[in-house]
Structure formats: C-alpha cells, structure tokens
Image (cartoon, rainbow, N blue to C red; front, side, top):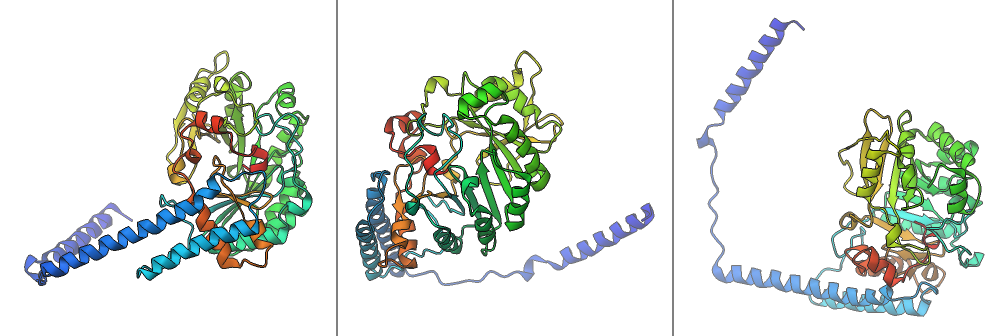
Length: 447
C-alpha cells in the first residue's frame, strides 16, 4: 500500500469517526427517573440481607467445626466409615438448618474454600514406593509402606478423577513415591487423558527409569509435561542425597524428555540446601543457556523426619545472590519475567539471552498460599487440602463402603475444604511447621 493511499484511508476513517461522534449529541441520552424505595421497604431489604449474611456465616462456622476434627486427625490410620458417616450427618444437619431458614443449599459445583480460592489442580500419588531414598523426602531407613490392598486401584483413581473433573479440576499431576514404578502407568495416563475437561496431565519423577520409549507411549496417552528431580550434578553428592547411583542415567533421560515433550514442557526441580548444593546453582543455570528447558530451585521444606534444619535453609534471595556471584566468578544476572498465571507457584527469570528459564519456588520465605489451587490425593486414598496441614479425609474408605454415594464423596470434599487454613496449614512459618511435626514424610504425601 502506498503512503498516499494510507493517508487517504486514514483521512476517510477519521471523517467517519467525526460524523459518528457528532451524531451522539447529549440530548439523545435521557436519564430514567425512577421512584426511590420507601424508607420502610429499604430498611426491610437491609434487614433481609443482614439476616442472610448472618445465616451463611453461621453455616460456614458449623462446617468449620465439623472440619476441625480432620485437622487434628492422625495420619497413621484412616478415618473409619462410621466416623465419615458422623461427619456427613453433621454436615447435612447444618445444611438442612440453613435451608429451613430460607437459605439455598450451598452448591458443590466447583471446589472453593472459605478464603474464596478456587481449586482446579489435582495431584494424585500413584504409589508410596520409590527407588531413591532422598534425604529431604524420607528418613534414612525408609518409611513403613501400606499393604497393596490399601493403595488405590486404577478404577478407584479414575472414579475420583471423574468426580473431581466434574467439580472443575482441569489439571492433573501424577506423583509418588516414584510414579514410574506403577505397572499400569501408561494405561492409567491414557484413561485420565480421555476425561472431559482435563487439559493438562503432568508427572513428577526422579527420572531414573524415564526412558525414551516410555516417554513416547506416555505422550501418546496424553502426558503433557514432566518435572524431573535432580539436586546435584556431581556423582558423589548424587549418591549422598539419593542413597543410590544413577546421575548419568537421569541426565540422559532429561535429554529424552526434552526431545519427546519439548523443552518448554520439561522442568528440572532442584531442592537447595546450604552446605550441600548451593554452590552448584550457577552450573544448573548454565544448562538453560543453549536449551529451552525450565530449571526450578526449591526452598527446602520441613516434613516428618526429613532432617530439616534452619541452619541449612537457603532462601530464594540467597539463591539469587549466589547465582549472580557465581562460584569463583562467572556469575549470571537474572531478569524477572512477567507472570502469566496467577496460580503459578514459580517466580520466573531468564539469564541474559539464555534459551531456557530459571524459576524459584519460595514456599518458606515468600509463600503463595493466597493463590493456592491445589488438592492432593495420597496413594492410600486420603484427600489432603494443604501440603503442610496434617488433616486428611479418607475418600478410599468412603468409596469402598456401600453406605456412601457420589453426593457423599462431594460433601466430604466440601467438609475437608472447610478446614483448609489460610497460610501454611495454620502453622505460621517454617519453624511452626517443623515444631508441629504433624505431617507425613513427603514420599507418603506425593509432593
């Protein structure tokens, strides 16, 4: 298009705009004059709204009381069917009282807690077993495992996934233990991938047995991304932290994942500990220079018997400075990237003109609880509404009893959400989490 033609087109468009603007004269708009409400009617409306608010608050208070029994429950045994029935009876009684006061029943069409956080992300642990013994994940001697019959079957996992997707879950992540140890993993991913409304199926793995062949089959079934745990690039330290060999195999499988899934769908997760791997951060960042891969540094979190120590805690701010300084020089200056997802737990950066990204998960120093959208199902079928909270409710026991239907399962989800705390499971900070010591080891939660 020539410059004269663009000029003529611009003048024509401008003239049409002015003509349209001239037609919008002030006198063409009229203000509707409505009679104000009589004072008596206005006061009645105010009283009605006030009563409605009070009734709703009373209902929420009852649900919170019902939920409080979950927040103090032991994680060593699941609640019995009788206890679940008692919880539900209290919930339904409170709901009926609410309706008797002309209040509509609280809908369970989406998963929202008392702080208006909408949950659309479900993490499902497939097994408690793991082929590593990572220090920050479990005690040196491992953990007592449930017998096979207490672990959710594939059909039970699918039943729960179908219910949760009907409540608004759109993103599923498979965890463990080590999910690749589940014999029917490929078939299970394909079944989950066929569910309506699911637009993302991820998996968190240590990567040891994540072969290219498995990756291709998992991708065909619907797997969209993987998070691979890797805490050091030094063989001796790898054995120290995992109590197993296999660094070269994990690095090889990271390359396979990038090849099959695309680097933007692969995240390498590094739990950072002072005195162990904080001097390797620049080396990890260097992996993003020529590869479009996501490197994430995670603040070490206290869980049951994982040896967490404040003296070895290395904060996000410390990590930034360490990367900038480098080890013996050659540091990298990171530039903050804009956030595109309000629920993203990662603060994203990029090093200069590097292809990949660098992220930080700041659970302890700068928590992101206000935007939490996650729920967790443990391998033995317990619903955890908070990673750091000790409270759980057994959906497995409810499913395996003839006394409960899907309405009851949905109500149990609502009850559990009623006990979800605003921040860090109600413990305040990382010291509070450590001192409470009321949680499972990470490997039994599923991350």
